Amino acid sequence: MANYRKAYLCICDGQQEIMYLNHVAKLIKDFPRKVVKFNTFEDLPHRLEKRYENYDSAAVFDFDYNEVEFKRNIEICDRLNKKLSPSKRKEGKHIYHAYSSVNFDLWLILHKEEYNKSVTRNDAYISDVRRIFGLKTTEDIKNEEVINKILSQITLEDVKSAIRRAETIRNRKVKTDSTKIGKTTIYSNPDFSIHEFLRAVLEDSEDL
Image 1 (cartoon, rainbow, N blue to C red):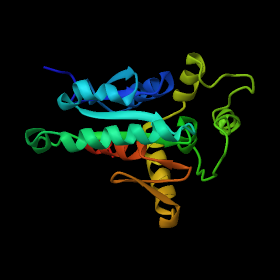
Image 2 (tube, helix red, strand yellow):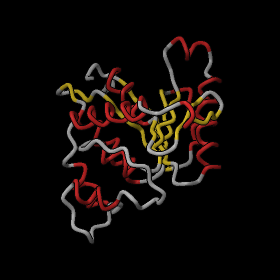
Image 3 (cartoon, one colour):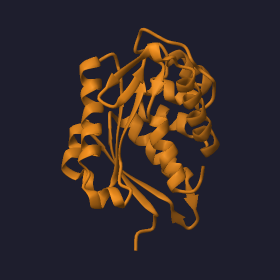
């Protein structure tokens, strides 16, 4: 028998997202069992097309000022979610897009601070990440060792705080600032859907 209650298939942009999800899984505990398992892969969301029926799945990706790819990634997730068989829908299966706009750096900031500043550069959050997590100005926040320094400071309560802060950001948006990609409504940065995925994970684990 598996030693966890639920597994998710997560296709991630890179190492930062993979390490974060693995950290979140460690935070959600029901000793001696693990509550959640993330099967993580570094790839593009189209990989979900091969295995998406077997798990609740998520594509974790950033906007990164690449509008064409960002739109395509959302469309893939929405299309696969719509294609789920009736039996899988009955089981409660779901395909999530879990994006951060502009990027994952901003999501990390929300674990510790309210932050609602719109930016125009992909590196605009780096100095704030270093400040908030007590890093040196020379440390590369994409480096594995430095990512571990950041994650070691993130608690389950911090994850819940980030979810609430992202929801507050979304609730303060105005309709005139929105764009539709299929049935998904997106907004100019800062904007997220990763908080919706993580809220579902915590609700599934009965830990929210």
